[in-house]
Length: 473
Image (cartoon, rainbow, N blue to C red; front, side):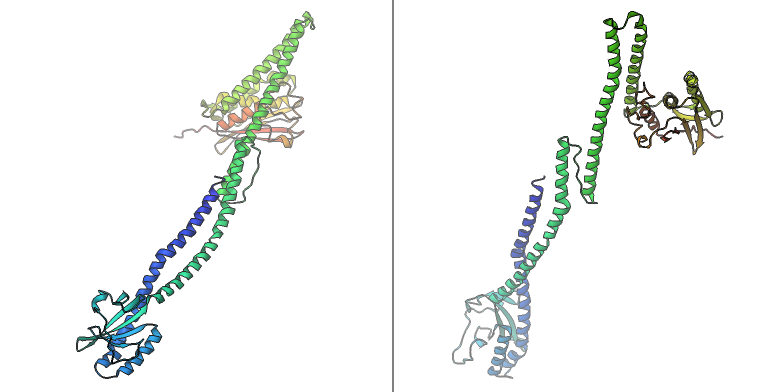
């Protein structure tokens, strides 16, 4: 397409021009000639009829002389650029505008037949071999007392008509050339608005097909081609981002698996070769066990996230009391909170607040959010969990007064394996997948989760759930 589309358009443009000239040379030529014939024949017939009803009729009625009529015919000959005759029905010449009056030498048209015109009032030819060139011959009968006394015949050279036709055709050719040149504006428009953008798009697709998803191009157009270019560029950027995320994902998984595996291998080798004495084996076996638990947690988180991302994921939605689930999850962190002297304050709307959701997955969301809140809170601080109802939605808030999240990191916390610089020292065993799992679960329910955080002050996560509709009697 890159090499032939423009050539095809040029070829079509040239063919259009040649076709235009061919049409003018054939159809327009014939139509113009026919039009000139009819127009000239009508004009000459009116003149012949006028002469037949005036000068010629007076001549046959002996009301005027041959000299007088001859002078009139000569004048009309000059005016019409045509030869005028008055002849008898037998073909005998009475007057000829091109020859002087000669009564002594009689001229007779051989085989003269006034019906030669047929249904028309003119004929084209040499008029019974009277001319060397083709003539348009127009007949008008001279009548007296309802009898045809003779004919007025006007001969007009066809060469004059052909010259007029050629002049008109020359004008047509000139106009066609002008239109052909003006139509180059369309060619220029096509080049600038269609061909060049398509060439950019084609080049971009070749770059993308070669794997260069970071190739950038721009088409300054607001039509469909501009929209196509923008969509293609956006698609490439999304693919590039997905590839970068995939590479980052693999790197993060490799890093998070390599660290505990390295520790496990090192401790086991040290115990085998005696570097670690036997009386310390139990201590380091517990460390190895903790590392295996960390690997198990990471593996389970990856499987959970993969299942959540699978299209068509089924949710086991039921109606349950979200306040009760919050109380149960908070109770499960009692030991951890006691060790860090952290208090959990529950501000729940009503004794019972029914929602429609997957109870197991919502428990996981609450567990992840509360685990993060405890992990990043200071000692002797308070974590608040609050439920409110607005517009048939239940909003659950988990708010801590911990280290907070830097402003630049707020958009990144949902990414897999992401850990901010402030959290790395406090989150030794974290996988960086908890918030990604949390968001996927909430989105799977068709709801939203937002975060509000100030560095050094604290963080608040708020997510929504649909309220259970109750039947009213």
